[in-house]
Length: 282
Length: 282
Image 1 (cartoon, each protein chain N blue to C red):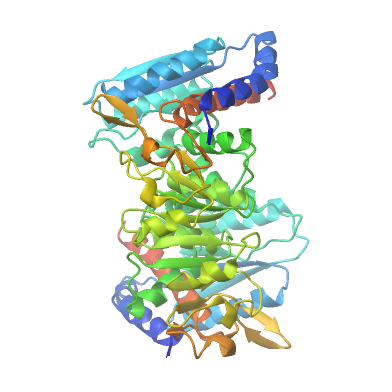
Image 2: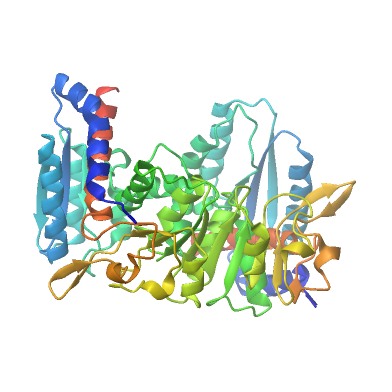
């Protein structure tokens, strides 16, 4: 059994960015991400901390813009618009889901395409669907692909079962895997015989957001399992896969924590650096 | 065996539009589609004729704008922009694929969202991916869903295998079927064991663009087959499914011609009428 740990993937990603980081430095540019957070959700704050750590490690900058939970749509939009215009900001990330009184749909049309490093806006969404390489892909599905690439797992003609059809993971991941010539099955809460769908795959990607739902009953020997889930159970982090139950059966598996989540912030860093590079190459 | 013919679906669709057609008439509005054709491709001209026939049947208007094969990008874009501005035009359809010297990507950002009745532009593409009901879905995948709806074929928890991952059919259809709670598998030229993928489905949608590729070896008794293919073989139209080979095995199947293609132009009509309705309700 191979554990597909995130840290070596992160190191490799950062190493590949070094030339760009050096070029930016020589041009006096510090890549900078604006994180916009509405309210004080624990999940958001935890993710924010890990972003700041990842960026600080290579001397990139993060500025957090916090808005009160009851912020108006107009104020939120004005914040995004001012960040669009701010020349020292290269990427903008807004924590989602937003509180119920705010329209994410309106924000999608406001955020500048070239700073939309987590693929929230209309244009980048269309690019992901079209397979247009110009755009930014959402960070989590991109992290899944980075892990598969790093560990040399070829996707051509592989059968992948994705559990979860969300806009931030399941759907964009489907597009990324199709581009790499995988045969993709998308399962969700209305899927019957989920166990059969899982067993028939070469690779299973669990992104349902349900703690430990995929156990030994869902898998067969020799499969590769990518666990995107991040759930808190009794004060401990766990994935959508029951790791202990499947670990002796699988060929390879990402741990939680220390797997996909670890790589996600590096993808955000990569996108922010790419955005900064565009500016100096303009 | 039930033949899922397109004509009753068309009749039902047009019937549902009658109230809107009447309301438009009372407001002195004739729903009008601009068809933009570059060059003289036979396929395009055949489709154009069927569009004109469908629209004329209910006294809606079609105006065809033909441009020479070697038209410049600028002229094509200017044509689209002038149609965007033209108040008597409610929908714009551009035949694709474009000749190689023209950039479809640039057109995607030019066409007005509210007239983009065949979902070519960035915004409608993102809406399809997001499942946002505000947008226009590409006409062919929408025609597939209209047929399934008309014949009372519920998609919830059904297993659908789609053969073909194109931007105009396979990918958007995946999104529409996921919204209707189907479990979807997307196959393509790199899929191994395509026969197994087909046999495991409740519903097969063939949209690969390869004449008669799906024969009795690919199916099991009792399945529903939707044939999106339109291929010319020895001067005769045929689908991606070898109809004669499978017809005695299946539960239901769309014929070619007379199936999906028949419904597609009605979807275009429906979208154009919806666009005209938006204007009078502004």
